Length: 327
Ligand code: 8YV
Image (cartoon, rainbow, N blue to C red; front, top):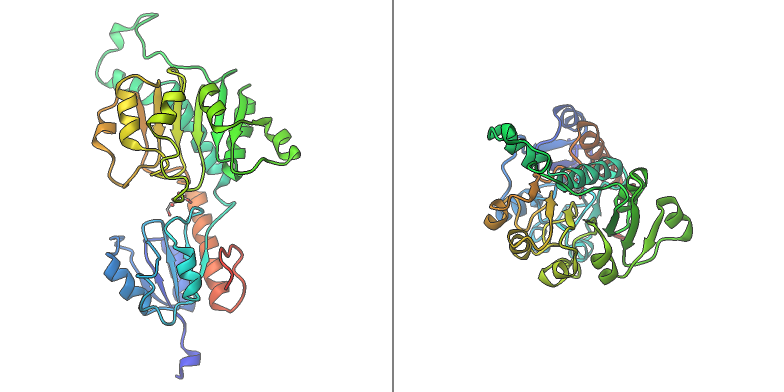
């Protein structure tokens, strides 16, 4: 068999659904990682040097060093809409197409943002611990975990892309007043559809009863929320982060929560995850989730399917549907 007739080699860097893997094995020579042990940078560099395409997730950092030996690599498909694990200029310089999975997870992630907001404001996990600890017999009108209302409160959304707009639309159903901050203003039509008004960062932090973070991570958005910003928030406010670890200064947040500087926080993402800052783990007024905003079976399957579609297109010499860079 000459090289031309050989199936392309691909890397599947994290475990995926077995049926999706079986389908890939029909058209490609697949190196898979179904045991799901995260590659070291050296292992990733070597694995990428042996393939023409790769399916990766947020756990794989694709930068100049990872690509150093990747002579035949054409496309790296992220199973994720966020792509802060990609050094896009380095990928472009190496002639490697970069793709992500937008749209398919918007509603699922917006649902979860709302779930985390409700659980945080109404102290759902704390209440569960209260029941499990046998405190229910101490119930009284005033001695319950008392929460903060969502209805008729003001939610401030920072990052008003597809997911932020999805949260705004859900908030409307709860009779909430919606304000947002974003690099650019939405069109009048989109603002109307979300019932949302633009606010400066300071105005949003001072006014919102609930602050929800949905902006992409970059060097510019690093520590968007630190001690200074938390100091502007209402003492009764909640802070929800479903964006990325690093957008919040977790140490500063832990201090603020312990001091009762704000009411509570709900976090799906963490600086240095899967580690969680030890001071956050000591806080009672917090709801913690292990980066599950997109985690429904239907959506995770749709994300894998879109990543595979991107990979196939790139290897066929076509433009992948969600190409990030121009190659
Ligand atoms: C992923 C996410 O689960 O799509 C994103 O940006 O954060 C999640 O949906 C995670 O990044 C794994 O790749």
